[in-house]
Length: 102
Image 1 (cartoon, rainbow, N blue to C red):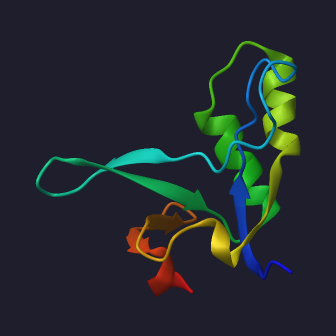
Image 2: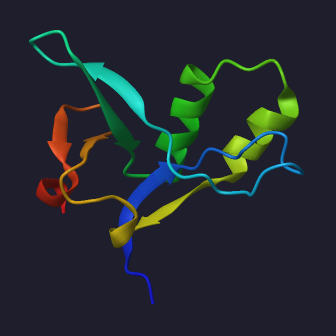
Image 3: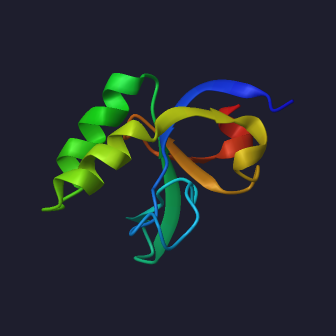
């Protein structure tokens, strides 16, 4: 059984849902490190409410159904869903690896 963590993530639903399988994985965002290179990371949240705020602030879509589907796909994430060496940020903080955050 998958080990659920205390962290929340936003799962990006594929669109249109009838053409592609659901649950593509967590949304990654580019973050620029001091040398100017983009680093993709997973935004994680300490609560479902903070994840919902993130979606409303960052996801600019005109399709209400897509917005609602994204909000419905906010969930706790499991330990094995992100590799230990991939970058994450918690509640908009700095970048750390998933293994360091755990």
